[in-house]
Amino acid sequence: MANMVILGAQWGDEGKGKVIDIFTRKVDFVVRYQGGNNAGHTVVIDDAEFILHLIPSGILHERKICVIGNGVVVDPKALLEEIKMLRSRNIGVDGRLMISENAHVIFPYHRKLDELKEQKLKKIGTTKKGIGPCYADKVARSGIRMADLLDDAVLKEKLLANLDEKNAILGKIYGAPGFSFDELYDEYKGYAREIKKYICDTAVLLNDAIKKNKRILFEGAQGTLLDVDHGTYPFVTSSNSTAGGASTGTGVGPTKIGKVVGVVKAYTTRVGEGPFPTEFGKDLMQKIRQKGKEFGATTGRPRRCGWFDSVIVKHSIMVNGIDEIVVTKLDVLDDLDSIKICTAYRFEGKVYNDFPTNGRVLAGCEPVYEELPGWKEDTTKVTSYLKLPRNAKNYLKRMQALLKTKIVLISVGCDRKQTFSKDS
Ligand code: GDP
Ligand code: IMO
Ligand code: MG
Image 1 (spheres, helix red, strand yellow):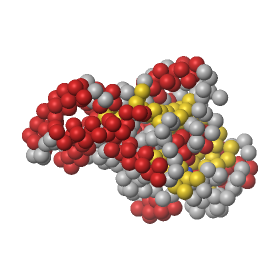
Image 2 (tube, rainbow, N blue to C red):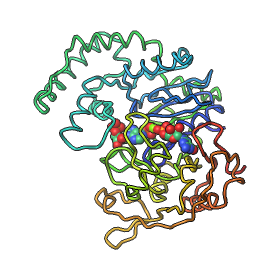
Image 3 (cartoon, helix red, strand yellow):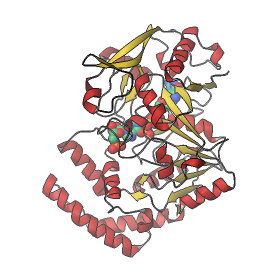
Image 4 (tube, rainbow, N blue to C red):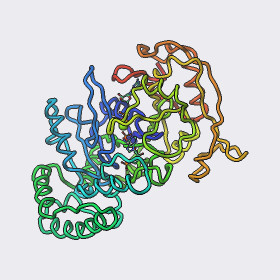
């Protein structure tokens, strides 16, 4: 089996955690390539629910190696909490977790700046985990990387320089207190002692593994429409959650990645601010949010819900080169009399079949809908495609025809077992 990227084709929370867990059986390595603990990936195994924020979902499988690539931003406090949570549930990470020495480190001033910017300036609805400010430092070439944590002199020099700048911004722009060098230095030296054993050159590790024919699964976080280049900018995250990020975020070249799988929710959700053409009105929003348990796995915020939007998923298929699709949460639509699919947008009298990248246009777009009859049957116990109600099959067929991309797997519940192949 080829090395593959599994990523979200909408605005995140498509059920990537569940799908990655299923594919993990076939691979040797599971690798996160971007984002940080803004992600929340849920895996349910026999009634036990695990939510992973930073550590690849593959950690739940014994003997799989999990890698946090250079493209990820790592909050060491959150990382150690996650390791502790896993240990308390009898899942050891030692010898199976590797972190790139080039991954950037999130500091408390990143979290604070994220929070203050959200309060006082433009609201994006971020997770306030410090993700944006940490990536901003990375691109500004002033960030602190994992390798720097291990070198006292370098850490001291870089932290002093960063604090000079951050404390001035905190005080002068936000009227907030600054951070003490001594306290942060001691705190992060403490983290460095605990994390040191996981830090290595993960690009070499992964490329050596490929030479030995080991198989790699690249675990996308967030979703395509949250990608900083291809998403609904500025209402996006600060990394490349699209397939290209798997190369830049790990040091594995694109020629070594054989397949891209897109995870698509049977409807659409989004957390935070920004345009959402197919967003439901109040009643349907309540109904689907309750039925789909659409509350953020990281922040607990209610997710905004809407009809399936083929315009955004076609855009995702294009910018990621998606080969195959997994459809999740089909069961959430079980009770509906009829179901809408957005096939195009209309803006100022013009019809858009392609996703408009101009934010002002997108914000003003009205969806063009097609309506299909619902199936009004419980699908959560269905174990094969053939046994799905006829109208559920028709819904999937229409989706596949609009997307011109093969649906390979269908998910009808949180559990591993509630998944079947389109060919079954
Ligand atoms: P991720 O960020 O893409 O990994 O997705 P999240 O874990 O944030 O959100 C997906 C939620 O839907 C989780 O609570 C999953 O347990 C749940 N889920 C996944 N697949 C299905 C499905 O087919 N049906 C239902 N009802 N829930 C699902
Ligand atoms: P997973 O991996 C859904 C959203 C936030 C906000 C925007 C920017 O679980 O699918 P950030 O904190 O990243 O600067 O916030 O991105 N966001 C997510 N939405 N799922 C996620 O991750 C998200 N990670 C970030 O709500 O709108
Ligand atoms: Mg999530």
